[in-house]
Length: 323
Image (cartoon, rainbow, N blue to C red; front, side, top):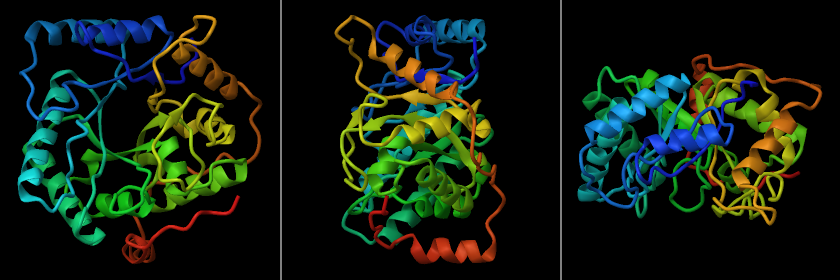
């Protein structure tokens, strides 16, 4: 089997181990799960038997690049002190659960500054990440801040936001990023042509660094670039553009990065699971002849000029890019 590290967000109903078995059945090489109910603050402790079954199956598969997604309730940038404290506690719990399950990457939305200036939200987010990584010192699981659709007070719609956090946190080696293709397009980065895609990834590389791009969410979008709307579509049926998915599937730096589908769990008219259809499409794109510039590997520490740029533009609104 070719190595492309494709996976999907799959259900853990009936036991965590079922997500691993379903991913294997679908011909995947990784998976993303929720380790607890994503819409509740509290969760029962991990069941020892469930953990043991998961670890045994994970080792049988020899899968190391597994992803979990943190609760949607978490807002590490909120100005509300009670919500902020609960978010830090919940994120700590997410990291502890991932560590017990030997999950490599824990994806979380950076949050929103709500009624306060964006800079205040960024400072709250940085302090929260520092607290979570302090509480989980020595853990192997990486906290991955996800790109978002941006707009309003939402953090993560610009690469500068993620760069600013990574530059400022104490344990920068514990913090990565998750690149969601739908979100990046909706935030205003044009991904519709090979040239536009290269420009977007070059900008990410210059600000954040490709070696800090830990995993992908591969989702097409029901809405156009700069819509600031988060509605996923199956690969090739939306408005992101196949050039984006071609670039990711063919880039040598991304071969071993987990690439997670978060599209609708359903079957096509012929009974084929849409996850299977999406994986086939992505593998077809990967098999196309290579050509053009491959992009840089990036990831060097920011220069003084780059740091000044991050500080200067992080809070500015982003205009839609021309095609």
